[in-house]
Image 1 (cartoon, one colour):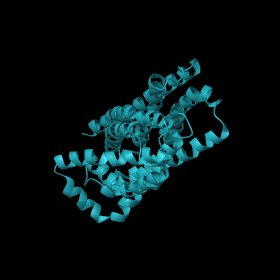
Image 2: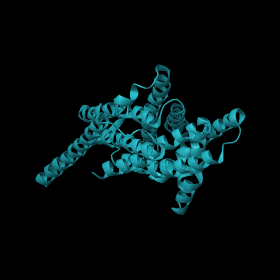
Image 3: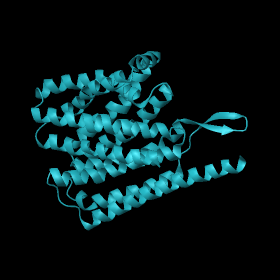
Image 4: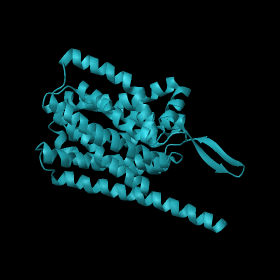
Length: 324
């Protein structure tokens, strides 16, 4: 149950990304600056945390073991995730970007066969290739159905070009984020804590963000004060708080693909927070009855996810108690 709660808290802070990115686009800011500034601002915060824990040297030692893999999967997990999200915000409202992002519920589950998980047998632990968690995927489909209902009345006002510009980049991001996250968990194993891993991926992706910054400067000049401040807030709320909470939740269930799917499915709640944020701060329309039906459907899916995960844990504990 705790990983689910951490996932929901992460979704709350992740929602700021969609609202603030849309706000920056509406005020004329470049998506290139929105993407790069977030991760540039994240560095000092994460450095301060890891240095305070006296774990920076350990992180650098682990990164030196596989520098190429750190660059590759940090690029996938962070750059191919966030740059497309910011690009989509230039063509779609925040609620649509947030709604489309929920395809990661399905994407994360479909990645299961790529990874192995530890299973206890009579002769000891063995690693077996993961399977697509059909039960968790079914729960995710309920949540996704709720998202569709929430956005159905809005989608009619979007042109086909806007739809494609908002859909394709977010589809790429939906696979990149869980793929990069899981790959880095495999590479780092138990050697790093959550803060170290997030800092390591941020540092490894920094060269790519600096390149994007150079392109942004060449095309648009320096960012305005408003965009700098809002990017700073995204860095704190989404880049630091939400990322750490979400990575902590996935760390807790790294060897159980069913629970991993449940944690990743909690990110669907971010669309609820994004809708509320747009209504309050960007003067968006109040959700219709159809949208509220979607809200209830999403909440039902979340309850079923939590119940399924809790029931499985109770059953295992009862079996262990019987054997003892």
